[in-house]
Image (cartoon, rainbow, N blue to C red):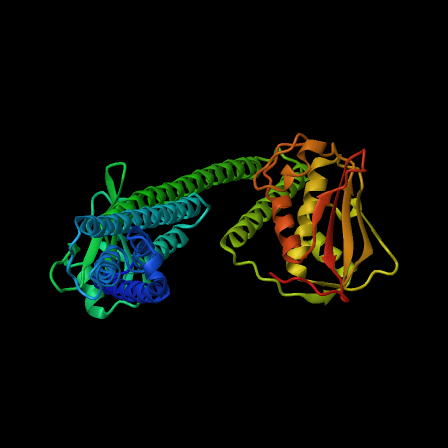
Length: 511
């Protein structure tokens, strides 16, 4: 949108050009008609001189058309009304012809001007509709609150061309209804000076220097963004002047922007609510899992300790040894649970760091068996690696934890005398080389519908009521190495958990 002085200068320039062109066209028409003057009727030049009037109106508007009509009246009278060369009129018929010509010229100028104004108004309305449609399409899009605010400021700047546009929001959106503190959330156009930025809000947050200023001072227009009878922001345009219909368009822009800002804020609040609900659910599941897995070993340890303290010679050496073994076993189980909980904390906080080193597969198995000593008897574990197995390029602490978790689950969920088989084989993929490691047991297995869910935090499966920490931690550690973990669907008896890790000739993805 151009300012009023600029628009007036442009209209004046067009009127002058239109008047000059109309006068020049009448001069050309006069040169063409003069040789045929004796053969022309009085009405013929009058009809011809209407054409320059139309040309002047099209170029310069009504003022240029009126000027062309006056010039045509004079030229018509001097060159085509007797006596020639003077403005004198002796015949009433000639006077009537002159009056009719001038009236027709002015009428044509008025009609053409109105047609031009109607065309310009139609184009303006079409442009306004297009801008409103583009704005509403963008506001309905999936934009973040910062992207939305930038888009609103940029759209208003493009549509109305002020020196700059600023969008102010309450300092705390959550308390927008109770606070008057405003901050500049988005701006477009020229950079704001320090004085202008300071003038947008007073020290206490009260807006000042807003509204329409009169006289020769630059105008500043402020439009409140209101949605659901609640102010959500303030739109400020610096040094902009426009017509009343442009004010209505700006008001429509402000209404749509207010609804979009409110919608984005409500969406953020909904996301925060969902996040809080998820945190509560996660906390509840964690507390349930911890209370379940802690209660059993603690109760066993307490019962064993109580029995040993109350021993009055009734317990035999074998019974005492069994109680001590039970205490040791349950203490190891508690230590494993605490380790898993600490790993969960590392994963959730994003503090997981991979430090890969080269390690043989046999050493990884030994590290894992040592970690579950007492929980998984080494006699139950059968290792079946391939003969051409390369070195593993892994963080052996993390992958050792993965294998230890799988061994513990297999030992707990399968019959006490059944074997647990550890397999390994190289798997080559384009540009990467992995080793596939598997842990197989003869337990109840995992139902097909639960093979994805068991890798979630605190899940339980039908094969045994347990906290889903081990497999969830294993999944996080394996994926941090660029590998994957899954339940083998081809196994019909027991369960076979398979995961891949980088080998020495691969390029691992560190997280």
